[in-house]
Length: 435
Image 1 (cartoon, helix red, strand yellow):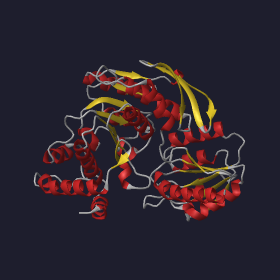
Image 2 (cartoon, helix red, strand yellow):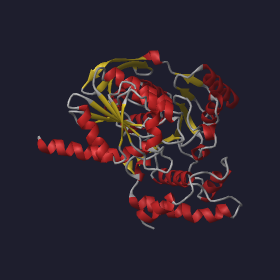
Image 3 (cartoon, helix red, strand yellow):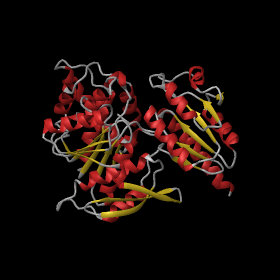
Image 4 (cartoon, one colour):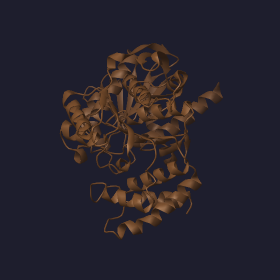
């Protein structure tokens, strides 16, 4: 099996589980020798901010000299992004070999009466095998969906991290905030836990789960971190976390919400520190200064700059537009928008349109995409709304409409981000070659 065959096999597996629960995943782990056991995992769940928080945690540990695995989803440009060790993607040979190993184990699982594991279960199994093979010191594992019955939840964490919880994936997690929080809280299993600030109902669910499992849980406060300004497109931030005391650092992630994510990540790492796990102050500062997380208020080019952000639910879109208004007040903004049909599209479109000079409606490359005609109907009537399914044309038009002093925002779905990111890299290279 080579890389192409491995990816064809993985992507050919049904995504939707035929049954909920972890029994099938536990059976697959058993047939693979339980590679998830005996490893130090930090488990991260939540609605928004999981990827950014996971990346910051992993980079702080990496800069402290620890071999650190990172598992996230979805990928933006290449599949291998999802499984990394010390910021290096899993290699083609390892991906193919371990995919073959998981594939060979599946008949044994099915002989026990289970249906075929899902795509996410297979990829998660590959990750566990790879991290065991690479002899990682720590693994930072982002939940795929929910937490309680997510395939990653076969692990036993040394620390559970909960990012901001709000409404999303309600067809799977329930239509109340308590039900959604209950799924996320499923990763709390007795080890210490730390959470972003949450509304009262969510706090009660998380504290109840922590008490039931004998875990201690703490909540960070947004008041404990402040933004002092901007320097060279980086946020200058200040916060106090023991054992390092007051830290002033540059955060290489835009967005007001990233202040909360960074404080949560640093607090999480502080809970790991001990005589056997030392994290120098300089490692925290350098990780915040260097961190890159694709398609999260990611800036490309100039005259105009283009911001790429995969906000894909109402809360994420609200945070994004608040940040855009804060950083780029009175700057003409053209939005390229594409949304999936199983999202709260009307609310997202209305929020994305706020402050926009124009909205160009496009379509994410998935059968789940909302048709342009329907999306266009959700954009307020007072906004100039233009349909354009071809990404390159949409980008060209947005850049022209924004003008040299304006800004372009591409948002609504992570499914679009890979292709737009490649177009923007090409545009940046052209600008460099002209100068």
